[in-house]
Amino acid sequence: MSSAAVAMLADPTVQIALACLVVSLFVVLQSVKKSKDEQTVYPVIAGMAIGNPQYRCTQNEALAVASKCPGLESIKPVLERIYGNSRIGSRYFAVPDFTPGRAAKGDPLFYPADGSYQVPVDVRLDKFKEKAVPLVSDVARRAIKEAGLNVEDISKLVVVSSTGFLGPGLDCELIKNLGLTRSVDRTLIGFMGCAAAMNGFRNANDYVTANPGKYALMICVELSSVHTTFDDNINDAILHAIFADGCAAAVLKGARKSECPKGTLAIVDNHAWLMEGTEDGITLAIKPNGITCTLSKFLPQYIAKNIAFFADGFLKKHKLGRDDVDFWCVHPGGRRIIEEAQNGLGLSEEQTADSWAVLGEYGNMLSPSVMFVLSRVFKRHNAALAQGKPGYQTGMAFSFSPGVGAEGILLRQI
Image (cartoon, rainbow, N blue to C red; front, side, top):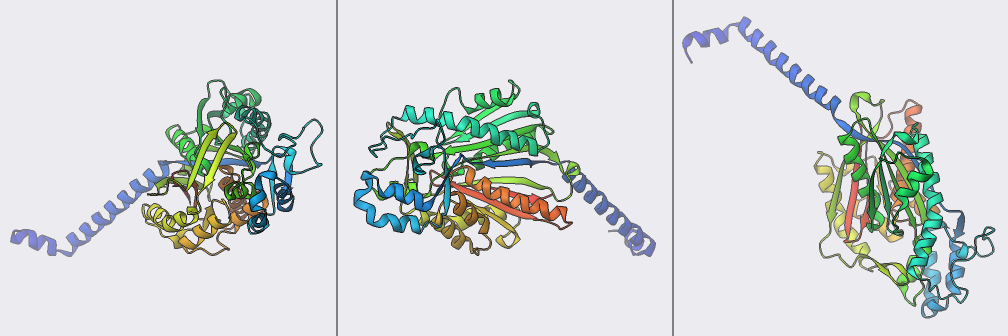
């Protein structure tokens, strides 16, 4: 550098000018960054609704039915322990067989009187359609209403289920019953088990992000009760002790930060992880006697071993840690599922209170379950905002699929 240049840089006036230039550039860059952030399109949940079939069954009632089943004779001594340790108080079912004496008029018992539970899979799927159509129609209408929309505003429909396979399916029934436009974009997600809602969110998120201003309806429905079997094994006893029926729907839109009210929670990312060597953890199959599920005794261990890796990797992508998360929507898949996720992440029971509450009141409804938990969080968040409080800043929801896969979404206030 020449002596003249050195002398010029030593001039206080020049130094002040350079400092002002640097500050100006920083302000411009920050403004550009802020402007870009303001224009980023985020998936936002505009409305949610949950629902269940009409038959509420206490755990004691369910135990009484199972105890009388001839297919469980060899394990009757352990039934009371299985049901008693479930931390489930009640569940809802689409068929009246588990609430003796309370069948609605014109709704006969579904299963044979001999206690065999032998019903062909096609008959079970017909019953699924009969019971699922009015349930999904009601829940979908309420979700759309909560979003402040008309049915014709929905341009994407995502239907999720692992317990019902139909063609034409529930998507077509919803179009007819709700009056959705017949050009609505449709996607069906099946056999992803308890994590299917996360995949439903992912599909709907991609659509609304690519189409700002348009709305997607994502709905999950599971009717495990129409696939009940009672073979003489612990697996069937556990399934009957925890699985239940339910439905949940969410309306999503793609919105820019500048368009969102203060305090809006947006889905900023999704994440999936297929655990190695865990294929036996959750298996689903379609058999002559219905859709079956087998849960490995090692499933809780698989979750305990992998959940921290899954969650920490997800958070790290956003320069976050577990301490930055102020709400956790853990899939309420059963007592051991919540406990091992809780222990693996170092969470307290208070931090997973919503998951325990949903498990206790509804049991494991498969894909809708985590949405029931999310619904509780959103109600509390919106109530806080209405009181002038800041609400939640960051949260994670996750559940588990056959594989075993962990699937989750990250929500942040934008």
